[in-house]
Amino acid sequence: MKKQKTFLKNKQLLGFYLVVGVLFSVISVVAPSISGELVNAVIYRQGDVKVYLFLLVLTYILLLLFSIADQYFFQYFQIKEKNAMRNELFQASLKRGNQEKEQIAAFTSFVNNDVPNIVENYYGGTVDIIKCVCIIICVALELFQIHWLLAVIIFGSSILIIMIPNIMRGYASKNRKNYGEALEKFNAVQQSLLSGAETVKVCLYRSNAKRMIENKNNEIEKEEKRLRNCQVSVYGLAGGMQILKRFLILAVGVYLIYRNIIKVGGLLVAVQLAEVLAAPAETLAYLLNAKNEARPLVEKYEQLAETEEDRGKTDINDIEDICVEHLSYGRNGVKIIKDVSFTFEKGRKYMLTGSSGSGKSTFLRLIGKLQEGTYQGNIRINGILLEEINMDSLYGKMGIVFQEPYLFGFSLKENIIMGRNVKDSDYEAILKKLNLGYLLERFSDVELDTEMVAKLSGGEKQRIALARAMVGKPQVYLLDEITSSLDEQNAREMEEILLAEDAMVLYVCHKIIPELKGQYEMLTF
Image (cartoon, rainbow, N blue to C red; front, side, top):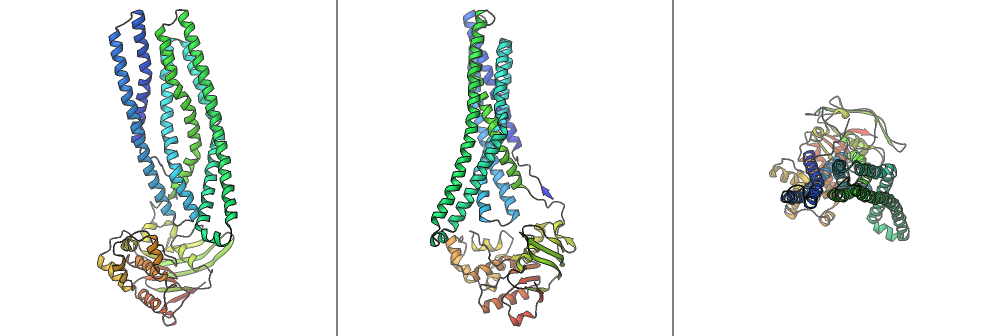
């Protein structure tokens, strides 16, 4: 079952920003109206000039304060929402497990570039669209009080301006999507080539690499030109309509004054309202266009934030058995595992053997639900299908170690305990048990950087990974070639330690130690 994320995390803050923005929009229309009344009071001696002057000053002060508040809350909302979205994407990505470098590059690009785009143009754009519509309505109502013909001009031109980006919506969304895909391809190729820079150098592949990058760069340029051309078209059409609108307001206003239908203050109000409306109307076209372009990014965010839902699934307390029933698995048309059935029982030790590529490692990854793709057959733990189990509860009972362990840029201790509640004495005892006691003094609480990790031998990395599994006191070990980088003596000692563990052990091994073989039940692939 997939959980669809509702990714707006700061609804109250967005709502508050919307209220402030709407009030700012209303005040921006009230100010010109008061100025018109002030002019009429001066010219035609209608009303108290001092009262209108006071109201005008007060309105401009409120306009300034709400303008500042509007910008402050928008910036605050952006910061909070981007923070929440980045966190949610990271958590969802962690749940999916390891990814290829190209996938990580595309994911990083999306988080850094497209998440701010969504917050600014989709969420912020929605509020700005509402503010613009609010201004248009307030202006139209005020102009109806002056004269209906001016209101019709405003309504007609504004509707035409709004329609322009909607007409271009499909084209704009397609261009934005194509541009994003071109950037992803460029980033993936660039990272791949830079990661293999030495190979590119020694194979004299630099000219080919340069040509590949140029081709991807040219694709970006082509898509960016299409995107910009679309935006320029929208801006040009909207700008032309604005010019026409201003001309009609001024011409009709002068005619109405000539016929003594409105006063000079009314024309002044109309001209000011036209200026007040000019920016929102032009901006509205841009905002609608930008929001349309952001829609594919929103859809992509929903896909990336989608995770498998564990709520309602069964928790595992004690693992009594793992039953594999007619398990088959393949990728890209190649059958890796074919019709395997076996039952692994609590506390017993199993060795998985077979030729390279026979599916042993894949078999372990399927049991640990770490392998991509779907399989045929069933995997049951305590009789419960793997798909129906809360995986966090299962991982708390498993110690999983693969041939190429990963070490983080944390301290040695944090690399091993991984945030779990482990006594210092237990942590140190396990390191000494695995002949790694000397690392306690060498690294202490120093964070491991890339250079430090590179200096560790393959055997040291494997034993650190095994220590990481052992401190959790698992009920089941899934181990893949964990002694492949160890000498015979250390390999024997590690196996003896594992055989003495009060846990089920599934151990993929090529370097079999004859004297210990009899302590395992064998499963050959």
